[in-house]
Image 1 (cartoon, one colour):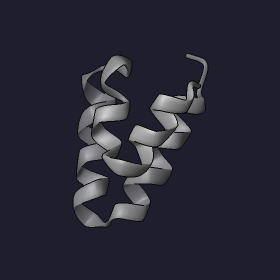
Image 2 (cartoon, helix red, strand yellow):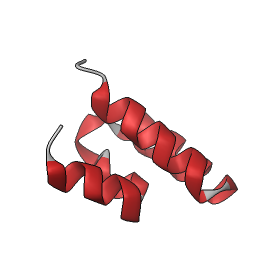
Image 3 (cartoon, one colour):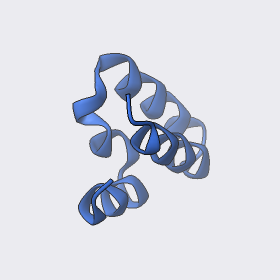
Length: 51
């Protein structure tokens, strides 16, 4: 997990998970629409997952 990805996860969460697949982008985008904090948490969890 690079510093740039973490910074993107804090600023705009869906952009940070763009390399993890379409499903991850949709989930993080929907959570970001519900609130900024759930989107950031989901993005950081997805980025921390090695798969």
